[in-house]
Image (tube, rainbow, N blue to C red; front, side):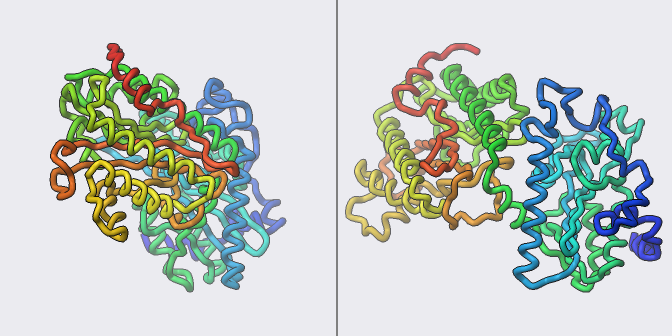
Length: 507
């Protein structure tokens, strides 16, 4: 493989570099004669993903993805160019910047049987392209920038088995990039750029490698630069993705509404002697029937004491009358995720212990949501939760009243050993590089999810509370005027929960 890199350095850039210098040289632009660089309107035939022509029920005219226009993608890329430029200027670095964003590759569960494909969200966010094994490359040099999309070429045999691919000729017009090339030319393209400027800074996430073959090639190519190391672009990506645009917020509203209605229907359908798996199937079905592509993550459907396992996903137990059900589920709608938790009595009636604990968690959650108008950090919200929860648990004897105040938060943490919030968006735990220590801002979408889990191992817990697990989670849009609860239509008041769960209607 390394021999091919050496060969690429001998490659005549005047012949190969019909895109390499296109953004920087009028002469190069005049030589763009290959079909990959034409801007003809893409045909009304099947591409590698839905288009307004082939799927008018999903996309409007001018949209690349459902709800996401070509202009929206352009704004995202402009922000990326601005971020890279500002980052390098702040460090007084004046070098060519190369940002490499790979698409996900297809993963197989067994020979020739793939898992359902999910695109790398950073790649999808900036490219709009859903095709596997693609690469988006941004090149910034002085005050000029250019985006090149590398894609798999058309292949009749592969398309017979796996479906159509978007042609290279179509990609420029469809995705609004400057240039498009077959992915087989990526290695030579990058080597030519490095040959032009060995001081180039290459931005690439080398920690979480998405395409193994591409990763190995890049690890060899970086050795040809003077830097011989990658700069991670993840923080730049996530800073841009953290604040949602108007169209993203609308997609999130839809995702949250679908999941809210699906969970409410699942509560209504639940009854004693059902299995956790049946409730899993019900919420999955209800989400898909309302327009979601699939669930956003493997759901927690925990009956009785299983709720004490925070990430319980076995979902294989029978739920007995008198048990609570803790369901943590959300859906993915056109690339945007919801994340909701509701807890309810399978027979439609809380026991006294269940009810008092549920009302405490609900009250704490309401206080936390109200406090968001002060724009705290997520970490501050967590510490506030521990303080509130500790005091309320003292009132019912789950924490001794004589415990020192400085130990109260630690005692509350024993009952709720997870954070109370995370960022939400294209990924369930969205923009993971962003600290939970920063102040929230309008346009962020977060969760608020306090819980109480009473383990028999907890020395403070009275035996009649043992095994209870309760969590209530909503998705929140932060606005200048406070919190907008995107999942408000999913019932959580005691009376509403009991009324819905007591209907026990077969679905």
